[in-house]
Image (cartoon, rainbow, N blue to C red; front, side, top):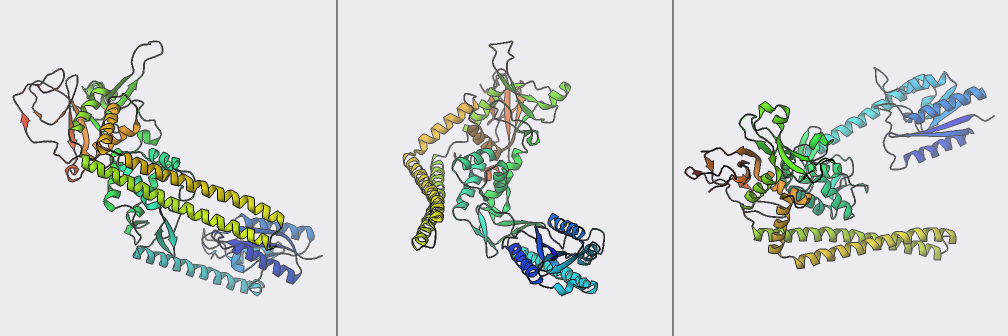
Amino acid sequence: MRTPAVLYAAKSTQDKKASIPKQFKDGRKKAQDEDWEIIGEFRDEKFSAFSGNRGPGLKAAEELAVRLAEERGQVCMLVCQHSDRFARGAGDKPGAADSLIEIWHRTRRQNVHLRSFQNDVMLSKPVLVAVAAEQAHEESKRKSDAVKNGMLGRREKGLAMGGKKRFAYHFRDGNLVPRKGMQPIVERMYDEFIAGRSDAAIMRDLMQEGIPTAGGGKWHEATVREILINPIHKGWLQTKDGVIKGQHEPCVSEEKWQEAQDLRTRRGPPMGGGKGRPPAGHHLFRKGMLRCGCGRCDEGAMVPRTRRPSKGRPGRATLESYESYERQRDPAACTMLPVKRADVDAAVFHYFEQLGLDVEATREEMAEAKDRKLAEVRALSEQAAAEQHRAEERLARVRRDYMDDKLSAEDWASFRDELEADLAGAKAEVERLRAQAADVEDWAEQLNAERATAERLTEIRAAVAGEVSGARDLDAVRAALTRLFDYFVVKRIEPGMRIHAELAWAGDGLMIEPVMRDDALEKGGQGRLVFRREAIYDGEEIRDRPVHARHGCLL
């Protein structure tokens, strides 16, 4: 009866270079030379034998070998390419990885012998096994230290460490290299976020345009968010020791990246910690941007509320309001009653208009947006055209092999159907992108900055007044307000109150006082609409002009 043998192969990392098939080939050669009968083959991938133990493959291989030894009443061979495939650990303290000598003794007691193709003699005696175990452990330790030192050196030089695929970069010769056509898309994502668009809205646009993710999978809000917060896109690298300056080409300026982070911070975390739903109404103010000025609650938040009529009371309108959060908790803590959403939002919008639109800057912004979009589409078109060319070459090459009798008719038919399908898909993508580029050109030719600006203002005014529910319009207003102001305070107008000249007014005797950001006057507006830089307060006070207590406007 021939001696039974079980083959085992292992790779500590993902087997990208087909090491495991080569190990099995050597194991089969060893079994053939020794005239062993191969009963089974097992493998482990991405299980280190230095920092931990091998995976379920080694366990299954050992169990089969033990069972064969028991059933046949003879020695069973457990075969690998080299002894370090079994273990590389020291086995010298709690939690340490297994040493080779441990596995050797354990299997020997069950009539299973470890054998190898490359250093079989080192598995013949305990003293040699101990030497092989020490050599394997020291070699792995040396490699581990070398990798750590190499990574430290790369960090000190500002070079990337590797890791998962990146949307805008890929690795070439150990360095981060921009992926063609992706940098303009990243910059557009930052521009749109700064202009007020949410991660979800940006995600939907990318999906509609057919732009692939780094791994070719689906877009998610978290994927967009990761791109918008990762310092790699401003030319820096995130390491375990902090952020360091990189040597790769940035996608956006440091100023733009920081503005996006500041805006995300000011917006605050998602309502309900990301688990709750946003307000149902058309409220302009969310996440603490509107505060109470009653004097009791220390400028507590005014939160959006939407109350719909009950089914038993038809004819009543939906009521949208802002209500004091502190008053909801304790009526005695705040004297501010609920205020109508329409009054507050409309008053703030009129105040917002007073900043003044810069038509020329808006025209330039739209032209730049057109150029960026065209650059994206053209870059993607070049990629699609290159893929079409490769598909054509593959089909032509297979056709030549068939004509030269290197392929059978059956193989030719199989390859032809697959390759022709790939080619048709590539051609369709090229045509789609060409049409998209034409659409952008047509849009640019028909664009009139003054008319587009006027239409945009009309849309925003309607959104704030609650006439439409355009989330994108409200996002644009919120983003602009967030760049200019820390928050707004709602106050009741009292007789004899001394007030500043440039304020927003709402009905029912309300005054809305904006609290300006310290750095607001240092920056111009950004986004689809560009506003002139003008001081909000002029420092003057109105002393002798009465205030209408009902409507909150200057007489």
